[in-house]
Length: 337
Image (cartoon, rainbow, N blue to C red):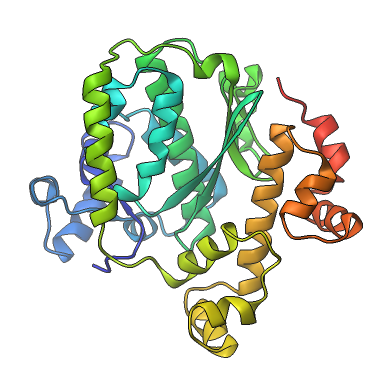
C-alpha cells in the first residue's frame, strides 16, 4: 500500500464492517479486497494497518454524490468514542466542546483523506472540510462522515447539539429533503464549501467525562507523535499547504521555485495526481474567503487584501464566480445563527 494514499483508521473500518451500516454483499466484497492485499480485520487492528479509501471505490464502483452522502451518514452512526486511535483518550477526557474540536488539528495522525480549516470569530468557530482522495465522490463520503461523526461524538460527550450545523457543498439527495436534521437546519446542502459551524456559547459547553490531567498528557503525546510522523504528503497536498499558508496570490512559477523545480515539472506532477495548479489555488482562495466571511470579523476589503488581492473589484468578481454571490450578498444571506 502507498503510504501517502488517503486511508480510514483501522478500528473505524473494522467497526464499520461489523455494523449494520453496510449491506452484507458490500462487507463480503470488502473482505475479498482485503484478502487480495493479504490482510484481515485482526491484522489491521493489531498492526495498525489503515484501510485505503480506494477500497470503497472498488466495492462501490458506481458511487455518486447521493450514494456517497448516504454512505457517509450511515457510517457516521457507527462512530464510537474508542474509534479514533490516538485521538480517543483526549476525546474522552476533553473539558469542553472547544477542546474536542481542536483535536481536529491532529487528524493527520489517523487519516490524510481530509483536512480541516478552523476559523475562530466572536460568533464561534467555523470548520471547513477539504477532501484529498483525488475522487470527488470519495471526498463527499469522507467529508459527510467526518462532519456527521463529529456531531455524533459531541452529542455523546456533551448532550444537545441542536445549535451546531453541518453544511455540505453539493445538492441534497432527493430522499433526504424530509430528513429531521434537514428540516431543523442542522444539516444543509448546496453550501459554497463544506463546513461545520459551532456558536460561541456552544464551544464552552462542558463535557461529561472531563479529566484535565489526562487531556493535557494525551495532547503532549499527540504533539510528539505529530513531530515523529513519517511518510510524505502527496505532491498536490504539499502544494495546497503552501497555497493555504501564503498571504499572496501565488503563481505556479513561485511555488515551483520554492519546491526547487521548474513550472513544467510542477504541472506534470500535479497532472499525475489528477489536478492542476489553478484548481488548487482556486479551491484554497475560495475556502479561505468563505470561512473569513462566515466569521464576520473582517471587512470584505480586509479579506481581499489578506488573500493577496490588490483590487477589491477583482476579489468580488472572483468570489461571485465561485459562489454566485458577491461577498456582501453572501454575508447578508448567510448571517450567523
